[in-house]
Image 1 (tube, rainbow, N blue to C red):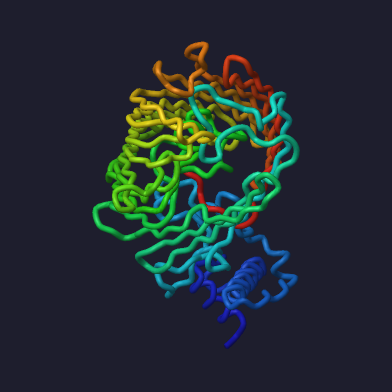
Image 2 (cartoon, rainbow, N blue to C red):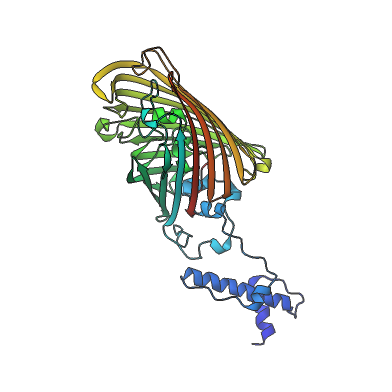
Length: 467
């Protein structure tokens, strides 16, 4: 077959417009050769073989290069089906080179590795004016790993996640954590769950070990936070973050406004629970979230949640019934809706912790005191994203309690509070260094002024983050 006829056939097959009906230009030939080289490279990549070296014609071609695999592309590709569905359209890559090949099953993973592997490395240096070993928060005993960070260098909490579609109906995730506490290294299972991906009527089910969807921050991994540590209400009422073994049912309304309703049943081993009461189904939750856009530059999310549990010997010494109510709200503004280039985020949450039972000092379990009352907490934070590199933020958090709380100081009621400021530098979407200053007043007699420098890096295709 003459070369010009072969070229014309390829032009027709690939949909390239010829200059004239019977003529193929040199530029089109170069474009054809470049396209063939690209297709060969993709086929070899799918087979796990090295791609052939590009020809001179390919390197000189005027064809547009393939889109780079940015952090947004990787995150959107690695996201769970539930999280990816909540992403804006612009966050989902339109990149044919990364798409699954024709003929593969709907549950195949487009990553080169199956499952996708993500690693978060996190470390810090902190200096406290008050010895963390002598830290005492009036009315709110420390539990579940809450409290100030240790003085000096610390590994913090690093994590390794493995995620993948299992088949056309299930998605799975395993997240392991590595941290050091009091000179001892610990490896643990943070989350290990499966999600359904194809239930009718926008329902989904999650089963395994996972973080509850109550409130705003609780379902987010700590490395996505705008500050080094969790707000005081999360420390006091949820031990930083509540996760347990259980099952979740979730429904998202098929409307332009985001509407999410759901509930969970957990074993009830972890704080604020304890003892896995009611035959190992000791904790129940309900949650509702709504959100939407206002124009192209504003978006919002609000929710209400309730957690109900019965504890026997929880970490803070409480035994009895606990009902925790949470209201949360988030507002984001960004020029042209692009939050990576700049913008402001405002967020707040309000907690009511209703308890009826007995408190025993963890250091002296025989000193049980009956107490029925409420404790409350709230925080408000604002983060100003200056550009892709810098952001600054401020947070105020506070706790308070009804009279009669056996852990209040003898001098009378006191409400712990804290002021925190941060500045973060991002070299890229995969690394950051953060400086945080805080003034913490945990009881009438003590104050803690802390300086923390945190570093954090992300390796691999990490799942897309929630709103």
